[in-house]
Length: 252
Image 1 (cartoon, rainbow, N blue to C red):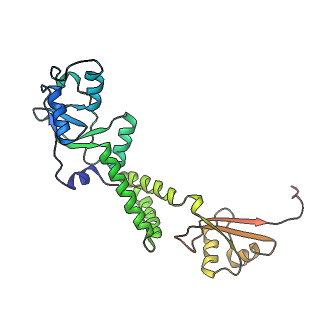
Image 2: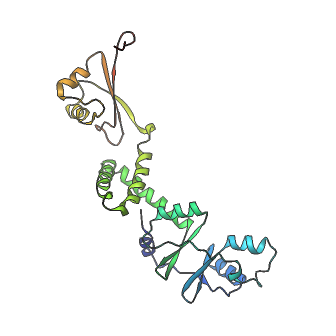
Image 3: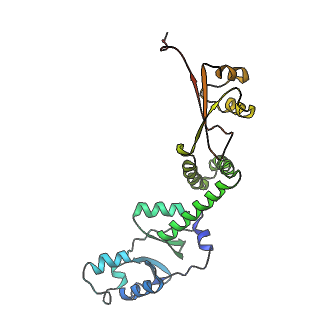
């Protein structure tokens, strides 16, 4: 998932801000002129608060105050939650959701870098999902993504910064491998040799001891089924072995 630094590099994003001693009316006019929902409140190059439509609605309009008389400093939110350029887009979404906010100022050290809104975050997440869907539709795309996650799992142990990327990819793969998308096929001794070899390799509950053991498990009184993903033909994802018997087995 894209970092906030990469998000800012996409283009020259204007920083819209207001001084704390400006009137609420001035702030509202600035927001209306630029079609934005919040302004950072900056005093002497330092972020001291954030002024949003919510602040105006709750602290001015509902209380019958005048926007011309009230100052931004009187109604702004002074306890501001900020992010830095190393945060990722999905982390921003989590912060917004957990704190019930719609805007996050971007601050590196003492320098104000910009502001990201929930609209920006949603657009970026949709664009990311669309790009991954395009990869999935490409030849061997799904297999490539699966291999990417294998590499991520190896490196995420020593590089904590990759865990967020892995969590996002896991969420994506969970949707791709929804049980409703999988196909069930019977495995027989006549199935392709490469597939039978994978059945031997992948069986982890009751290990298969070579070809003779597999042939025994595929006798007429037994059945083997496997689930496959349409984009990964020949790759058994879930394997089930069944044995047919007359009557109920008796424990001894």
